[in-house]
Every structure is written in C-alpha cells, then in structure tokens.
Amino acid sequence: MNLSVLAKRPQEPSRGGSVMPGRRVKSAATTGVPLSAALQSAVSEDASQFDLPGLRQELKDFRRRCAGAVIGVVFGPRSTEDRFFIERTPATSLSLTAVMDSLTRQGFAPQHLDSTSPLFTEQVKSVDVVFVNAHGEYGEDGRLQGLLDYLGKPYTGSGVLTGAVGLNKLVFKRVMTGCGIPVARYAVPHRTLRPLGVDEMRLADIPLPAIAKPVGGGSSVGMRLLASAVDLGDSVGVPEPGELLVEEFLPGRSVTVAVLDVRGTPVAAPPMEISFDGEFYDEIVKLDKDGGAQAQMRPLAATKDVVSEVERIAVRVHEVMGCRGFSRVDVILGPDGDVRVLEINTIPGMTRRSNFVACTAALGLTYDETVLLMLHSATLPHILPA
Image: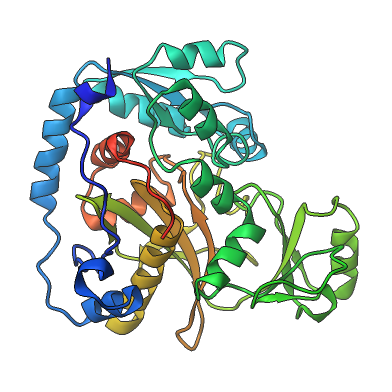
C-alpha cells in the first residue's frame, strides 16, 4: 500500500506554536513580529479551546482510509536502553505489546520488526509504514530514520537530524543555549579546550552534587549522582572521551510536557509533574516489577503564568528541533519559578503507564487515539529546524 493511499499529504506546517492546550499562535512570518513575542502574546489571549471532538473525527476518518494497512512496529534489544527494559519487563507490559494491540483493535495489520534480526531490512521493505518504537542508539538517534529514508519507507516521528541532535545531550544543550533556551550548566570530562556555549563550564567548576550521564541514550540509564569530589573523580575516569556529561544537580520539580502537531500547529499538553521516592529520577525509579513507572504523575500545580511558561518553552524546543508529529520535553521547575530544559524525547515510551501517555491523556486523548496520532505523523512532511 502506497503512503498516498493512507492520507492526503498536508501543507507545510507553520512555525506558529501553541503554549496552552488548544491555544494557537499565528506564525511570526505572517504577523511580522518575532516568534518569541508571538508565543508570549498568546499566553494572555482568550483563544478558543482545543477542538478535541474535531480531532477525534479527523483521526476516525484517517483510520477508515488506512484500514488494513500493514504497519511494521520496530522494537528489539538493539540499544542499551531498550535492552535494559526488555530484560526486566514482562512481555505483556512492553510497549510493543500495547502498540500492536492498539493497532489491531483499530483495523490495521501490525507486524513486529525486530531490529536485531538479520532479516530486518528485508522485513522493513514488506510493510506499508514503519511505526518507530525503538529508543536510544540505533532507534532514536537518526540512524534508523536514515535507513528508512534510503529505502523510501514512510515512518512515524521525526527525521535524521532531529533524532541525532536530540539524543546527543551535549549537542542538544549547545543548540538550546544557542537559541536562548535555558538548560542546566554542564561540563565535559577530558576537555582540554576552553568551554563552549553559554552554560558549559570547566569540570573543576561544576558545583556538587552533580549528575553524571552518558552523552547518548535515554531513560536515565547509566546516570549517577555525584555527591563529592571523590565520586566525580571515580566517574570521569571510567568512560572514553566524549561519552560522559557532568551536569549540575538542579533542585526543583521534575516536569514533562508532550507536544503534538495538530493540523500543522504544535500543541502543548498540560504539563505533568513527576514525583518519586529517590535521590533523582533514574532508570530504577522509572521501572517497577510490572514494567511500569514507580513515579507518580499529576498535573502541574502552579500559577497560570508559570504553567504557560513551561508550555511555551516546550513548544519552542519542539520547533527549534524541527520535530515532526510529537515529542516530549523534560524540564526542571526551580523553587523561584525558573524553567530549565533537561532533554527532549523524540521517540517517547509507549507503555500504557508511560509519561507520554499520561500527558496525552491529560489533553483528553485515549491510548488508541495517541497511537493513531503518532501513526498519522508518517504522512507529515519533514521540516527543517526553526
């Protein structure tokens, strides 16, 4: 089945964003004002509410047109992140199971594409559309997307450049600071040259406690809390140059925001605060014995201005990165209300209890509707970062 059968290709999305659920911002190109000013002005506008019934009808129409399409769902222990969760999670609780069940319920013909199989490339060629459900290296870092582009196979989510920059925490931070988006200060071990970027520091100047994390990979796999200079010395002596990032430990509230492209406009779902027992939000906190998160999620309790600022920054990150269809942005909300971006997830997890699913549920979408919206992203054009 050709992609043109699945859906009519839409117009190039505008650069405008939405900073409140369903609140839309006119493109800076059409208003003649800077994008940041256009985004900020929308906070105080009494815009019409998000048209959830209208979106649901569009998704139903899309599903009807796509009925019977063969959807290849990529999933396998190719990356450190996926291997970690597959080894510790019952099969019934894996995102693969949830996504495949959802696609089946909605009239599609899903097939599991194991990214570790020697027949993977041939299997990809046999499906109509690829649903990218692989995380970390070889799934989220643009390499899989490059292969799919080469094979001419449509796929869900963002493209090569967005994935490559988004998964590399060092490059991502430099892009953010270059665009005036606040991030946690950081240092690169073994760097002999002067620091680059506004928020990069020399390792000796990083305040403790600090967080050591791999430059690549996600789900907090490999993260360590460094409470002392001894911890710092032990950590930076282990990896090869370029593999580790040391970041200041920011006190505050962990908040995550899903951003969805709806009719060409980025829409921020209500920010969700993550609470948990532990020193920081590591991979153990993110996984319990049933494959779900131990952490609790609830809508962010804050003033309207603070919530709007969190949403504005999440949308801005989504746009700057050139995300297609969806993303999830993680931030720290400091005690004084300042917002600092931690990372972006271009391929967010899709277990039924994942952060992304909780975010879209807060916007009013069911799990099946979230899967369908992600599938629809395969019909959207790739756009260059803002």
